[in-house]
Every structure is written in C-alpha cells, then in structure tokens.
Amino acid sequence: MENQEVIINIPMEHMKNVFGQFDHYIKKIEHTLNVTIVTRGEGIHVIGTPHEVEKAQTIFENLTALSKRGNQITEQNVDYILSLTFEEKEGQILEIDKDCICHTIQGKPVKPKTLGQKEYVDAIRDKMIVFGIGPAGTGKTYLAMAMAISAFKNDEVSRIILTRPAIEAGEKLGFLPGDLQSKVDPYLRPLYDALYQIMGADSFLKNMEKGLIEVAPLAYMRGRTLDNAFIILDEAQNTTPAQMKMFLTRIGFGSKVVITGDATQKDLPKDQKSGLEMAERVLKKVDEIAFCSLTSKDVVRHPLVQKIVKAYEDYESKQSKPKRGGTAR
Image 1: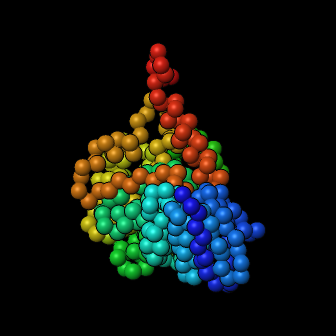
Image 2: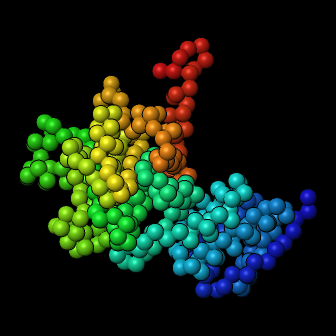
Image 3: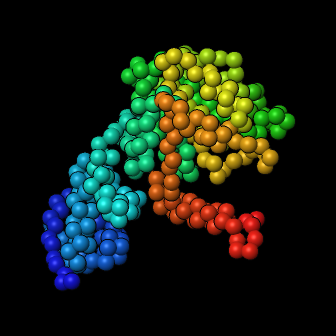
C-alpha cells in the first residue's frame, strides 16, 4: 500500500503542550503508529499508510482541542488516546473532557480522564449505591470525593460522611499515642488529603466543626441511620461480610453511597472473607446498585504506576491458571 502525506496545522501557542518536552509525544506517536512526523512552522507533516495517517491526524486534532480547552497535556493523556485508537474510540476523549465535576481550591478542574472513570461518575449520578472496584491510582476515592463535595455545595445532600475500616483496630491501636481520634486519623488520612485539595482546609474544618462533614472509622456507623447524606466507604476490601451488611443497612432516605475498594490489596486475615467480594456476588442484580470495574487502563498517576499495576495483573493472572499436569498453587 502506498504511503500518503497529510499536513496538520497546530497553532504555535499550543505546539509545546501538544508536542511535549523535546517532542517526546511526537516520538511516541511516531513509534506507536509507525508513521513519520516532520514539523515545519505551524504545520506537521505525517507520512505513512492511509489508515495510520488518519489515526495520527485524529490524535493530534484531539490533543490540540484538549490544549485549547486549557488542559495541560500529560504523557498519560497521550498514552490513553493511543490506546483508544486501537479500539476505534479515540473520538470519545473530548466527550470525557467535557464532564467537569468541580474545581479544586486552586481552581483546577476535576474531571474523569478515562472511559472507565466517566462510566463511574455517570453511575454515581444515576444510582443510589455505587461500588467502584479497581487498582490503586484509578481515581476511585478522589472522584467519589469530588462528587460528594459537588452534591454538598449544590444542596443535594446536607452532609458528607467518609468512613474506612481501621483494619488494625484492636490491641495494636492502643499503642499509638494520643486520644482515640489521634489513633484513627492515620487510617483516614487519604480522605482528609482529598478534602483539603478540593474544598480547602478552612472550609473543611468549619464544616467539620458544624457536623456537616464527618470522617470516622467504620465501627462508628453501627446503630445509626444516615439520611440525606453522601456517604463514602473507602478501602472496602478490608470489611468483613458482617461489617458490609451493617454499613449498607445504615442508609436512609435522600442518601447516596459510594463504596470503593481494591480486591487485590486485602489486609484481612487469610481465612477471613471480604465483605466487598461477597457484596458483589449478593447484590449484583439489585436495582439502584451499580458495580463499576476500573482497570490498569484507568490509572491516572505517573505512567510507571500503570505499568506496575499491569505487571501485577499479568502475574496474578498467570498464577491463578492451573499448571499442566497439576493444579495451581
């Protein structure tokens, strides 16, 4: 098949953002799509087979559109758009970018960055209870927190309740210094970090003093009915089936619940079943409950984190397969 050449015009003010430092993104697109890219003035010349040239053109048009919307193009953006091209879904990246949940205290927009994250955010909007299950770095907790703060600011709920199982609660907890709140705070720190970044420390502390925002260990939920609240249960893989049932039966009228967890990072004793895994089996057919599975494709931290998650997924998949002539160990 004969090669063809296409000229793509990119405004000068967006070139650095779209091309990356030392044209790193151009080289990545060249290598992945097996095309030749030459930069000349405000235009870039893409040479290759018609199919690959068309893909490259779509990618550069999408990256330029993202840049024009004020986004800082990252290597993760480029990697994700490239992965979408092989599924013929590269055009959907702009639809994902339109969905702005809220802004951080510095004014940075909080948006889903992958199709998996977009489906997760849409499920939170549509369903009363959503389970977000996936590896570290997929934005499960952060996006849930952003949705909670947005609902709170829009008066859709009257309070936010954030909870986590303090898995080391018991004898070990007693040796930590300070009062009970000081002892459990380290286990809840990731929830505080997200609140500070999105809401700001002053606003968070004021609302916490008023009882409008509550951050507490899961054990504190027992015996309560939680009406008109946005409730997030984080690290749910560390709940027991009894704890999960207790938590789910606390939910009252006007409430919305997001439960996040990573089944591969359980800290429970080996003989203890996870409440998250049991809930997925028991509740998968219940209306108003959604289960969203995020994967290594949805990791939005440093690109190395995505590679680490993928490597562990591949290794665990191989370990779980029975070996020839015997059973899996």
